[in-house]
Structure formats: structure tokens, C-alpha cells
Length: 619
Image 1: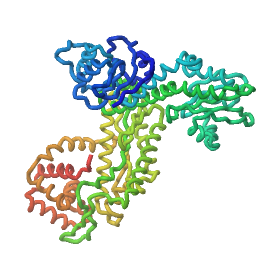
Image 2 (image 1 turned 135 degrees about the horizontal axis):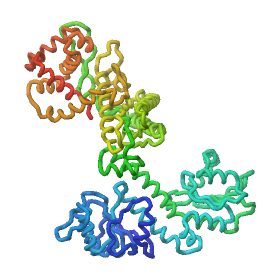
Image 3 (image 1 turned 90 degrees about the vertical axis):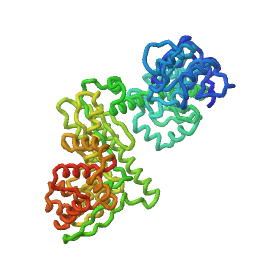
Image 4 (image 1 turned 90 degrees about the horizontal axis):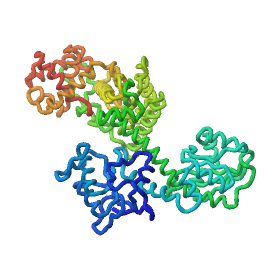
């Protein structure tokens, strides 16, 4: 790793923490006070020859011992050490007196106090790039107030002071905007200000029509790619303007716009003043970006933890702005996993003629038909990504206050529920299903999207319970669809995989609520609990199921239909598109070959569970 200089004059720990408005760092200990100077940054471990004098050291990578890392950094003159905010930190060593707090963090604090080095922890939602950017930007921010009048004025008042100073140096009216064209600061509005400037400042951002106009004219492309001051002549009621991009290296952070709306021309040094202003503005816009990114990622971290039931539920709810007594529910939209067949059983039954004694079955493929090329796979993935992205947008815009998380391929929505408006949860699930179907992903080979609505729980502190039930709903819907798609179609209707990929099947729905599925969710929970027992069991039923699935699964599918039909041979045969005598023959094979007595109620119960467990789609 390498050492990074922050600036020649030392950034102090106090300045670093004051700059960190997003909460990336948390101070654990400062034994020498917060005015200790930070002259540079070390990322990870350096060779023994490298001096750590006055530097802040980031504990990046896998460390054999956090406590030893702290001791070594302190011994080499480090001003501060930053650790990941992780409970796996070393416990307090025996030779260090106990400190307030518990567990690993208390141990690290005790070691740092004894070594005389400041100790900070990185927020759980942040990464090391965030910390490095923060330290570099804080150093630039601290140094921005040194050197000339514009920088000195800005140091005392931030971007608002910078806008006023630039207005004075250029003779124009100033707005400072981020890359989303939101106004971050502006100079005073005079009576001569043009209507566009007034509407931009009052609305807090450049109007959409204006952004589109600038895009069509090519000005935005020039702005994004140029480091120079751009001149835009007056046009009708629109005054002359000077514009410059604000960059950190090649990264675009925002822009400064100067309008000559006071009736007079710009000053002779206006362009030079704008170039200097763009330099001075960099650390302020980086701080703005870190603050916004930190808030967004902190909320995402809180939402992910709340839905998973991890950590301090009350803190997570507070971060999301949710009252502890706010009823809520979780809705999950989950795309089809194209890497698995409709059921784990290798072959599927085709439609035989209704004649005894038996009808040979044709083996179906064990997975969805492979794409003809990598491009086809990429196209399907693109369809799924686009569909799920639009579903996330739809969920956010359905009603104010809904929080949405992209979790892998899934979309999870935490829905605050108004009293008496519990139907809103299922209505959102229905809307997501309608949108997914209208996008045609199934027709493009991406498969259907399953949408599950969990029950309304009395508090966001129990959101994980609603999320768990929503996941069960999705599993039940997917399992029913896979089972229905495997059933022979009397009139043809394509292969099982075709029907599954298109989301077709007997009585198939792609969305449902936990209340609608009722006992089916309890059955899923029972099967989950029994799964370990089944995997290590033995006996005639186990031998039957395992051997038959290995050779095609004909008997297992026949047994499933027979048991689902309450042991009615006629109904089961009709469902399988078989002659009843063919089904009776298969049932005799179950008894004769494997010694499984279908007249025994316990055996039938065991078979029912075994068949369901053995043919469940992958979780």
C-alpha cells in the first residue's frame, strides 16, 4: 500500500470530523485531543522503513490481529487509526484494564488508549474508498481557505460565500449547481434578474425544459468535456452567460453559471475568477456528494438490516424515519431463476394415449433450453434487469413513504400501511404483476416475475416477519407453477419448460398475499423443518423416491397426482392424462418393487411429505 499526503500544513482530527457530515467515521478515542495534526494517509500496512509520523492509518485488508496493528501504528508515530466497524475485532487483552463497553471494540479502544493513538471506526455501510475520499477531501477543504481572497472568503461561509464572491469578481449573477442541476448556492437576486434565473432559484433546480434545451444545443456535452470557461452569448431575453465545470480530476462534480443580467458586461477578469472559483468549490461539492451518498447508503443499510432482522431494530427504523408503532408490510418481486428446471425431477411425462397397460414416457430436458449464444443469455439478463429496475421505480412511486431495496435480483418494498388501508399492500403486488406482464419478459425468454405480499405487522421492528412470509408466498407460487407446467397438456400446448417459462399452468397466479395462501405457507414451514430429516433418512419410502427420481421420476409423479386426488384413481389418471389401468399398474409396482403399502395411513403421510420434499424447486 502507499502513503498519501493530505497537504503540507496538517489537517487536524477536529477538521476531519467536522467535514464528515455523512457520518462515515465514528470517533472512539482521542487521547491527545482532537487538535492533533494529520499530515498524510497510509492505506493498509507499509514496510518497516515507511514512517507513519502524523499520518492516519486505514486498517485495510485481513489483519492477523487488530490490537497488534494498533500497537505497531502507534509505535511508528501514527496520529490515528481507522478500523472497520465490525464486531469481529479483537477482544481486550489480559494485560489491559477493562474499559467501558463490551466485546471487541472495548478491547481495541483500551489498546489504543494505552498506545496513545486516536482510534476511529468506519461506518458499517461505508467502504474504504469512502474513507480515503473523505480524508483527501477534508484536507483540500481545510486548505481551501488559504491562499487568496476568494478562498479565504469561502472558508468562512461555504458555497454561499463563494457565490457572492464570484458575483463580485465577475460582475454577474451566480448559481452553483450539482450534476443533477440542483442549485447548491446562488448570489443575491436583483430586480433585473431574468425569469429563468428566478424560476431556477425558487424551484431549487434548473427546469426540465431548460435542461433538455441545453442538451439539444450541445452545450451540456461541451460542459461535461471541457475544463475551460464556456461563453454563451445573449439570446433575446436570455442574458449573456459564462459557465465552467467543477471537477475533481476527471470526475464531474457540478458547474458554476454566471449571468450578465445586471445590464452591464462581465468584468475583464471574469473568466479567470470563474476558473479559480471552480478550484475552490471542489472540496465543498465533494462534501455535498459524500453527504448525499452517505445518507442514501445509510438508509439502504438500515433497510437491509431491518428486513433481515439484524442489529438494533429501533435504530434502523429511526434512520428510515419510521415510527415504532407504524404498521407496515413487505412486498417482494422475484424473477424466475432460469438456471433451474421447473422441478428437480430430471424427466417429465409426455401425453400418452389413454390405453393400458402402460405408456412409455419421454424424457424432458433437465434444464431450460440453453441459449444459442452468449448474446442470447446477455439479452435475457438485460430483460430481467430492465424489468426489475422498472418494478423498483413503480414501487417507489406507488405511494409516498415506500422504501425499496434491490437485493440481488429481487425487489423488496417496505410499505407503511395507513389504518384501514391494508388492501394497499395486495394492490401494490397486483400493480407490480401487471407491469411485469406488460413488459413481456416471459415472452422474451426471461420467465415470469413472482410477487408476494407479506402480512401487515404492527411495527417496522417486525418487518422481518412480513418479509419472511412474502418470501414463502413467492416460493409457493413458483412451486405451484412448476408443478402445473409439468402436467401433460391434453391439447398439446408446448413442452413443460415452454409452459413454465411463459408463466402458464393450471390455475396459476403470479402474485398473492400471505392471507390468500393460508395453509400453504404453514406447509412450506413444515417441509423446511422436515428437510434435514428427509436428507439423512432411510427405508422403503426413501429407496422408492430416490431410485425413481434417478431413473426418470415416473412413479413419483404418479404418486403425487394420486395423493393430491385423495387416492382417487380416476381423478389422478385424468390429471396425468393416463388410462386408470395404467395408473393402477404403477401403484402396484410401488408395492411390489419397493414394499410400500399405500393402504397404511402412516405410509401415505410419509409418502406425501417425501414426494413434496423431493420435488420442491430449489430455494
